[in-house]
Image 1: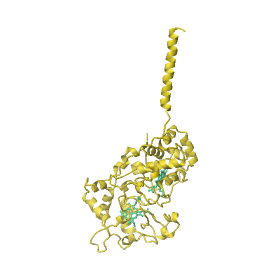
Image 2: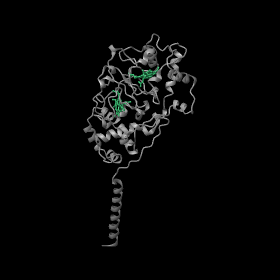
Image 3: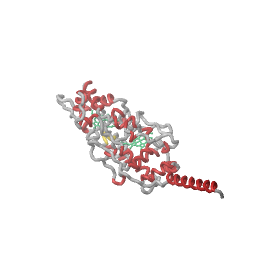
Image 4: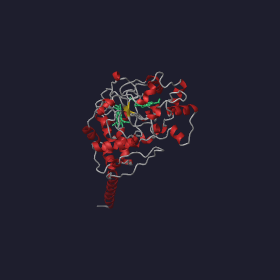
Length: 362
Ligand code: HEC
Ligand code: HEC
């Protein structure tokens, strides 16, 4: 063997060695690495994150990948984000959302934010007790993504990025129903809205305009039968930091004869719950038209008209609607109405729609 040949052989060995090393780096086994996910929630109370599913960077990331994943649907065209769009406050501007089979449901999509402060069930009728239970329902709903969990799991198993991310996020590294639901729960819990103009006003950082301030007073004032003080009575039900009391109520949309959707009673099977629906948060309300469980009102103006003059009496209408039900209703002037809307608009948090932490991952 001449020297040249020896050098050549050595060079080949060296090259192979380097390639092996490079291979090692690429294929270095991904492992479980749970680092706590840190997020701020302003002046909202401490969020109710379940102790068995604390948020980790890796779990939230996985949940976010899944939230934007079309493989979760039967024909691989629809993701959660198709009906829960970030630019619309994670809701759907269509009255009823279209599923993969081209069929429509009969309820308006609900926005997704501050779900860690929901203490009394999910969906308009509260049929899911925990967010993790909720998360698997749209996947299997024939009117929504219409896919089986078996298919979802096998599709995700074919994707290296998911195999890796499940390893990073969960000790048992398994792509299964439980881990899919836990990851989606983590991502949805991470979507927090606490930086509206109204929050800044409460923190003393911003002032309300005169119209917004008049609207704020109307919102938080009781109806006065003597007519001396104007009050629109909104705060009893749209209460607390998220503008909801987390109760199922009937705000007078229909009389008994027109109860087409029995709402809470579909779950509890008791007549007292007929046509009761979860009081929705009013945060970001200007972003999430149309309104009510069936999206019947296109605008906030129409919502205010309803509360002022068109509340219907029925066997389950809430007693707080007693003044709305009187002839002449809340007796709001057109200025009162536009002031109320100006106030509602201060509940919009632009950072919710622009925060890249909630956007489609690359
Ligand atoms: C075809 C449209 C559509 C798709 C796809 C969809 N949703 Fe929804 N979502 C809705 C509608 C409509 C509702 C209200 C349904 C009801 O109350 O009966 C809703 C309600 C919810 C709620 C309840 C929020 C609350 O305040 O109680 C959550 C959470 C949610 N969806 C998460 C998801 C997740 C996670 C996915 C993906 C796995 C998903 N959605 C896919 C339309 C959709
Ligand atoms: C008796 C309790 C109650 C009172 C008082 C009340 N609301 Fe509501 N509000 C509800 C309930 C319950 C719903 C959902 C009803 C449904 O969809 O069937 C709702 C829905 C809404 C919606 C639509 C939310 C969405 O996401 O579609 C807006 C906006 C709203 N209310 C604003 C107001 C304003 C403004 C006032 C005061 C004028 C007010 N509410 C007074 C209980 C109440």
